[in-house]
Image (cartoon, rainbow, N blue to C red; front, side):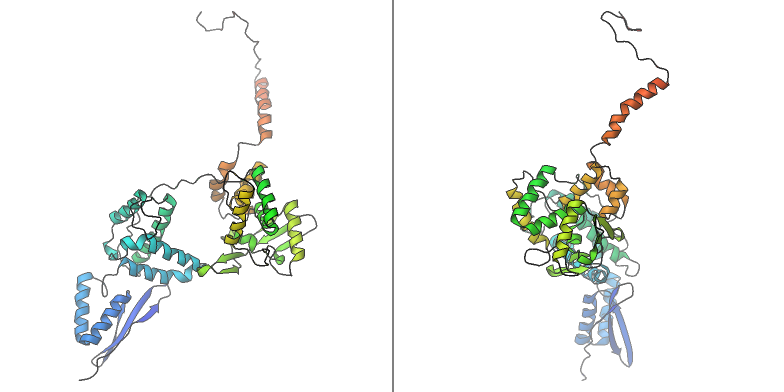
Amino acid sequence: MGRRPNPTPKRYVAKDGTVSYVVRYRNGKVQSTETFHVKRAADDFCADIRDFGVPEALVRLEARLSAVGARGVEPTLREVFEAFIDWKRPRVRSSRTIEGYETIWELAIEPTLGDRPVSSITDADVQEWVDEQVAGRLAVRVVHGEGRAASAKTIANRHGLLHSVFDYASHPARRLVPTNPCSRTDLPKVRKGAPKGLRPGEWAALHAALSQLDPDAADLALALYATGARFGEVTALTTWDVEDDGDLVVVTIGSVLRREAGGIFVRVDDTKSEAGFRAVALDVDASDVVRRRVAAASPGGYVFLNRHGRTWRPATFRVVWVKACEVANLSRRPTPHWLRHTHVADLLREGASLPEVQARVGHEHIETTVGTYARTIDGVNRDILRRLPARRRAGAVGAGLVRPEPLEAGDVVPGEVV
C-alpha cells in the first residue's frame, strides 16, 4: 500500500490584498488545486487527504460546501479579522495602527463575537453589543473595565473597527457576508467639548516651574506653545528645518517622530495630512530659544533634546510636565496638548482669521478648524463693538429721525390709557 500524500496549504495575496490558501494535490494522474479563503478550511481539507485519501477528502469537502455554501467551512469573525489584518497591514502608515486594532479586538470584540460564524452576526447582534457597552455590561478583558460604561468615543472607535472588518468581509471579491451588519447601528452621540487651554497666569507659573526643574523641557514647552504644532512634529525638528533671516525664525514642519509597534520611535518624512507640511514663523521669544538651541546643536541634529542628549519621548516629557504642574500649584491638571489649543485661542483673540489658523496648525479642512476652535472665540473684535453705537446713531440721523425729549413726571404717553 502506497504512502498517503501530505499536502500543505500555500498562502497567496492578490493585488487587492485578498488572502487565499491553495492546496495542490494529485487525484489519480490528474494534478488539481482547491482554493480557500479561510486557512482552517484549507487545513481541514489537507488533513482529510492525509487521513482518508483524495477521493474521500473530496466527498467530505463537497458535503461541507453543501452545508455552508462556502469553500470549506463557515469562517468565524476571528478568522475574518485575522485575514483583515493581513490585508490592512501594508496599507497603514504605522505598525502601531495595527497594534491598536489588535488591542481593540482582544479587549472588546473577540470575547463577545470572536467565535461566532461571520454570517450569523446580525444588525441586532451588533446593536446589542453596543448597548451592553453603554450599560457597562460588556465582557471586556481589562481589570478596571468591568461594570463601567464605555465613553461614546470609545464605543465609536470599537464600532468603527468592527464596521471595517465587515466591509472587508462583504467586498465582492470575498462575499463572506451579504451586507454589513454595522451599517444601521444606533450609536451614542459623541459630544466634543470645547478645547482646553491655559490662562496667562497658569502658563507663566507652569513655564517658571519647568525652567526651574528642567530648562530643556521649558524650551520644548515654549516651542509647543509658540507654534501650535504637535509634540511629534516639534521634537522631529532638525537644524536643517530652521531658517533665520535675522528678524524672526521660520521652521519647516514636514517630519514627525512616530511611535511604531513595540514602542520604537522613528523619524519619518511625513505629516498627518497634506496640509501638515507647512512653514511656521515664530514670535520673538520662541525665535530666541530656537536660535540658542541651533547654535548648540550639531549640523543636521535635533533642535530639542533632553538633558541627556536624547530625543524627547511623550512619556519622559510628561513626567517633568506633571511635576511642574504640582510645583506651579495649578488648580487644573493640563496636558501638553493644551499648548496647541492655547496657541490657537491666542491667535483668534488677537484677530487671526480661521483660514490663517487652519494653515498654521496644519488642518486639511477648514471644517476641522471651525468645529474645533470656533467656540473658543470670545465674541467679536472689541473695536467692532466700540463702532456699533456710532453706526446706529448715524442710521437714525440719516433717516431724519429726531431724538425725543425725556418725559417729565405726569406726562401722558400717546396711546396710553389713563
